[in-house]
Image (tube, rainbow, N blue to C red; front, side, top):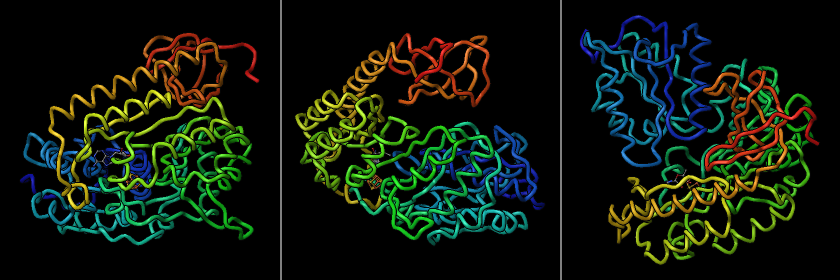
Length: 448
Ligand code: 5AD
Ligand code: SF4
């Protein structure tokens, strides 16, 4: 069978490979549940599966080329290939082109349409091809099967899309306008995740803190109201949320950090750059000083909160001294962790056509300097944690015999030795720190 022809019978096994953000991980899990509900069996690795779903990310460089090379790699030695479906944000942005350029791709499905995946796979298995990249709000979630089992730390998408239109970003085009899932649906999905084994839930959204809905009594609430409602479940121990926009940090949400024990002391609050001119050109609609005073207000109610961020170096027109302001900001904030990226022009975004693109060599140099500053910052944060007593949620086994890995309340990776199981909450004292992880000593008496 030539590589371009799909199997003519309905696939029996599948593999979903997710790239990029946590929301893609969530979407990948939901696609797997959906295919499982059709009687298909998940296989890891992928190459041998009858159906491979590539759940793609379009946020940065060479996303599309990566998809084409992944497609090429799926061709087997005997010339056959699995049935290939391209999902996620590259499918949304470049679906038509993929269909034209890659005959082995039989299904292209955008992030808001994947509830139709089984039908589309059926059409492809019958010898056709199927594309869906519509963006209807909400329909998807209602059409997905109910959640059944979960790891100790689960994702729950509460909000999707973005209306902020930062000038570098494709998300408003690939994920569409901001929508919030209804309160009751989320309470129900959280209940099922907890029943399925989750001890911690991370609420996800491109602008998660813009989430709003009516509660069960018809009152309009924000993310803090949802967190309060979920915290009432005695079997749920921890709640997190990501990613937040500084302008959507409401007073209620800030206050929640001082009031709700189950809300973990960690906040991912991207700033992107440390120069007000660059922030304005990025259309971030906050300044360095408004960001810093927001952090002061959050730290006033939760002094130990760990702050995380996203940074872009080499935005068009960024001068060396503007970049230095970013490094200064990192030093002022004391980030516990962060993600940093070289600016990558995204087709169709306003920044892609801006003048004064920063040369690649300069961009590399800035990224290295920023990452060194961020590394110092995380090391300092972790070292300051030595001596702290805290509870760690066990997520997996470590490499050494009897060693386990889990997360502290501040989202640090902590390893320790003992007789435990995945999903246990273990009290430890943090005794050693590196920039990326800490070691803990198991305590015999519980942490207050
Ligand atoms: N180039 C580089 N980084 C980007 N991000 C978003 N768009 C781009 C781009 N065009 C980064 C931002 C965002 C994170 C998810 O990805 O820092 O917060
Ligand atoms: Fe992209 Fe900005 Fe929206 Fe974040 S807030 S998803 S960076 S447009």
